[in-house]
Length: 156
Image (cartoon, rainbow, N blue to C red; front, side):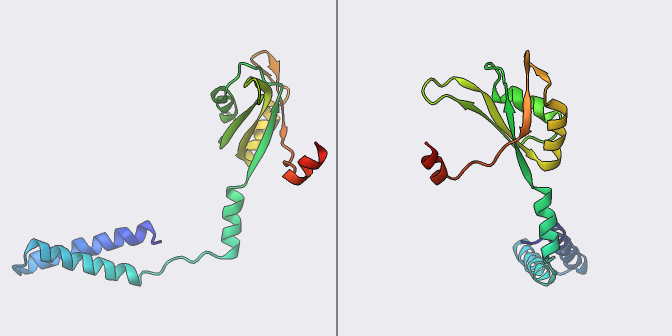
């Protein structure tokens, strides 16, 4: 995929070609003039080098997007996803919020999970663990990894 710079450069070349043809006094119909400009822009894009990603740059971008799932316990039963998202967004970007419900009754179980970028998650843990929220003292920590399904069925 070409960068925005390549697209802007191709547009600039097309405009420059249009101006040159109009100033030169050639009597060329608008449709043909447009086609010539588009052709010139397309050719220009083909010869503009693209930036190749290296292993070190892809590692850096993966680190930028690394996320952590936080366990949030002792939630008030009246808390909803939006109130939790609002609370945690004061401490960084919130990627997702999942509040657990009972399968049979559909009532909230008093805990959930919040997914945040790694650096924001650390801030949220430090700021919100043991803090009061709707008259309950929250328990916020990094969530444990979910056990694979085969281990879950053996333990049941």
